[in-house]
Amino acid sequence: MDNNRALPHEGSQPMDAITVLGTARRDCTGATRRETLKVGALSFLGGLFHTPGLLALEGSASRYLYPARAKSVVLLYLQGGPPTQDMFDLKPEAPNGVGGEFKPIASSAPGVTVSELLPLTARWMHKSAVVRSVYHNGGCHKNLPMYTGHDINLPDEEFRDTDPPSMGSVCAYLERDRPKPLPTYAYLPCSLGWGEGRKKAGPHGGFLGRRYDPFCTECTAYVDHPPDEIWNPQVVRGEPRLGEASLPREITLDRLQGRRRLVEQLDDQFRRLVAQHDPGDYPRQQQLAFEMLTSAEVRAAFDLDREDPRTRDRYGRTLFGSSTLLARRLVERGVRFVNVSWDNYSQRFGVSQAAWDTHQRNFPMLRETLLPNFDQTYAAFIADLDARGLLDETLVVTMGEMGRTPRINAKGGRDHWTYCYSVLLAGAGIRGGTIFGASDKQAAFIKEDPVHIRDICATIYHLLGIDPAMPVYDRANRPIAVAHGGRPIGGILA
Image 1 (cartoon, one colour):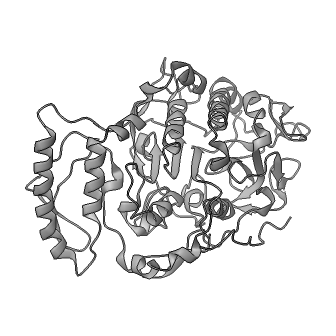
Image 2 (cartoon, helix red, strand yellow; image 1 turned 45 degrees about the vertical axis):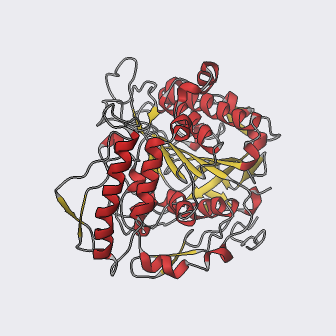
C-alpha cells in the first residue's frame, strides 16, 4: 500500500502562593516585569508567544480543521528505545545473535503475533495496529522527530526555543481561546528529561512560545531496593501530583483575590511596555493559574486517591501505572493531548538510568521489569477505556525515540537503531488487527511500506481533525506545516 498517498479530509470546516517580588526580570523583548506568579510546577504558564505567526493564522485555521475521529490522544512514550524484535516484530527464525530469546504468541487478531511476555496486550490486538516499518534520520536518543515530525539530526538532545512545536502544543495553540478548567496538553509524570536534570527537546511549544508548553505534573520516584548497577533495574514506583496544589493556611480566598488584583495592576503596566513588540497572553495565563489554585474540580481530577484501590492494582502500583491511570482521568474530563513518559530519574532520585536503553542484559531487563510492567499497565488502560466507552474516541499511541539493533552485542544487549522499528496504535480511528509495513528477516531494515516518523505524526493530526499541512509560523514568519510533510497512513485507518 502507498503510505505516501494523501487522504481526503473528512469535512471542512498548584501551588503554594501567589507572590510579588521586587527583583526585575528581563524578557526576550528587552522589557522587564515583576515576577507575579509562583505556581509550583505549572510550566504551561510561562512565556510569550509569537504574534506574527498568530496573526498570520488567525481567521484561516478553520479551513485546516475537520471532524475529528479522536477527541483525545494519549501518547505512551517509552524513553530509551524499546526493542521491536522482542515486542511486536519477533524473528524466531533469524540466525543466532539476532533472533533473541522470546517466542511469538497468537493474539486476539488473526495472524497477528506479539512477544510471549505481552500476554495481556495480546488480548487487545483486535483494537490495535502495529506499524513495523518506522524510521527517521534524527539520530539516536533525539526526541524532536517523534513529537514534531521534524527530522533533523541536531548535535544534542537539548531544547531550543527555535524548535518546531509538538503535537500537543499545536492542540493547545488551536484551543488557546476556549474556556476550560483543565489544560489542553498535559505531560505526566514530569517534563521530559527532568529526572536527568535536563530539558530535552520535543514536547514543547518551541517557536510558538512557552505558553504552549505542556502542563507538567511533579512526581516522586523510588525503587524497593536500590540496584547495584544500572543494568539491574527495578520497578520504579511513585505518583504524579500537582505541585503544591493547596493554599497555605494563612492565605484565605479573600486575600488571594486581593493579591490577584495587585498582580493585574502590575501587568497593565507591563503590557503597555511590550505592546509594540508582542502582547503575549499573561491575563489568560494568570486566570488559568487562579482557577487551578481554587478549583475543586481540578484538584479532584488529579487526585488518584479517589480511584478504587482495585483499579489502581490493575494498572500497577508503579509510576508508569499511576501516570497512565491519571491519563484516563484526564481524557474522560476532556483533556485533548496527554503524554505519559516512562523515563529515567538517575539525577533526581538515584533510580537506575537505563529505562528502555538496553545496552546490556537486554533479555533479563525485559523479562524481569520492562515488559511485564508495560503489559499490565497497557492492557489495564485499554480495557478501562473500552469499559467506559472511551476507546472509540481516544487514540492511544505507544512508541519510543528509536528501536534497537537486530544483532545482540557482546554484553547481551541491543544498541541504538533508527532504521526500522515499530509503533503501536489503538483506539479511535484505527483499523484493529492490522499490521502495516514489514521489516526484513532480521528486523534490521525496511522490506516494504516505509513509514517516516512524520507520517506517524500526520496520522495523529489527521485523527484529531487537524490537517497535517496546516501551517504555523516560525520566528521569521515563515509557514511551517505542522507535520513537516508527513502524510496519514491510510492502511491503518478504519
